[in-house]
Structure formats: C-alpha cells, structure tokens
Image 1 (cartoon, rainbow, N blue to C red):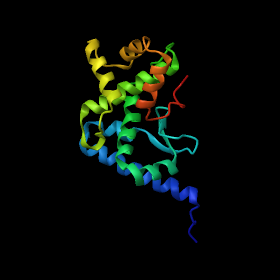
Image 2: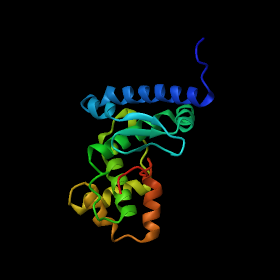
Image 3: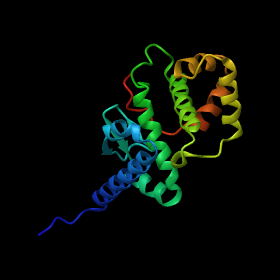
Image 4: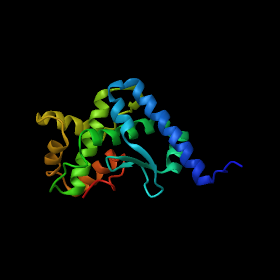
Length: 179
C-alpha cells in the first residue's frame, strides 16, 4: 500500500515543484546562470518567512511558497534570483567585521539593483520612488555598485532611513548566514 502524504508532506512536495518551475522560468532568460540556479538544494523550513540560504541549501516555507505562487507568482522568480545572487556575490561570507544589520541592508540593495538593472521580464517590477532615489544616489557616487560601496554610503544614513531602506529592499531572510 502506498504511503498517503500528510498535509505537510504534500505542501513541501508541491512547493518544491513550484520552485523547480520558478528556477526553470528564470533559466529561460538567464541561461548563463544555470549552475548557480541549480546549486542550492531545496529544504523546507516552516521557521522562515521568506527564502533563506546558508550557501548550500535554499530554505523555504512551503505554505509561503504556495500562497505567494497563487497570489503573486512573479515575486517568487525575483526572490529566488535574489537569494542566488547573494551566493554568487559571496555576501554570506565577506561581511567580516562590518555591522551585521547595515551589511545585510547593503547586500539586499546591491542584489536588488542588479536585478532591476538586468531588466528581464521574469523579474521585472515597477520601481518605487525610494528605489529610484537610492539608485540615483548610488550612480552619482561614481564608486561602482557593490555591497561594500553601499555599506559605506549607508554609514551616513540615520536609523530611520536605514529602517525605510531595509523595508524597501527586504526579500529574503539572512538568518542562516554565517556569523
């Protein structure tokens, strides 16, 4: 007799199918990223509210993936790519002695800027006024675009501004990043 799936098992299995679909959708526009897109092993984790990674696994909440897929499927493409880009840019490992919260905001901004600059259909979104202004500020600095450059820029910002930027650019959870 075949094993009958529990609700949790069914959600995890279905969410993994959704993630495979999302990965394939991104691949169609970003074929050069195939290795990176397939490098993270999917790992259901009900404790995370968004995607998360430790550089080896892609942690996800099955319930969240299924809910977002039903209501805003394009966001999953963007969130998946966002998490993969953190690994490509080595954000998880190069934070060193930087202030953790400010570093993570800088990493999110760098990744989101990269995704927005790509202009790919699968990850396209309307730019908010906050993003537009920050991207202009970043381009005017003339220092290039990297998490390290953004981190230095953010040292000038108030706590309120940092909170606003964190809310604007938040996409994934950094709870599994090495300390």
